[in-house]
Length: 149
Image (cartoon, one colour):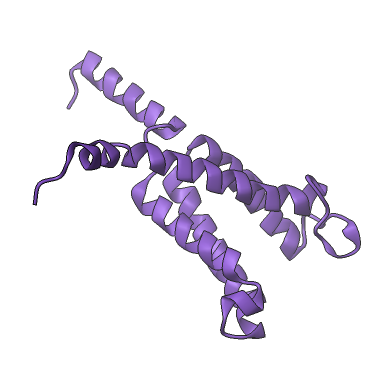
């Protein structure tokens, strides 16, 4: 099967679209953490306040805000994404699954989607537009200048 020029050209964008997906996902996810910790961009905790950092919601907020920021710039993407995937899986089964099977009814669709997106990022990496990619290039250039394999 021959690919047309358009299909080949579009396929070439896949690594860059991976970076854009990572950035958009991280931006949205980071807001959940900042809302829990700082009530920014709005309060989402019961009573409109913030979560104490030592509470379960506070720990989740720290993971979401800090992990989201690291993913946003693409730094330590694979391990951070794997950790956040686990956090979202735990959040789903701890907070949402007990309220019923269907994610659309138990309000767990975002947690489930984040869990699988982060699992994908942990395997696929950050894409070319990331600090990880820049660090990789720098390490390769350094090895070349030292003539290391």
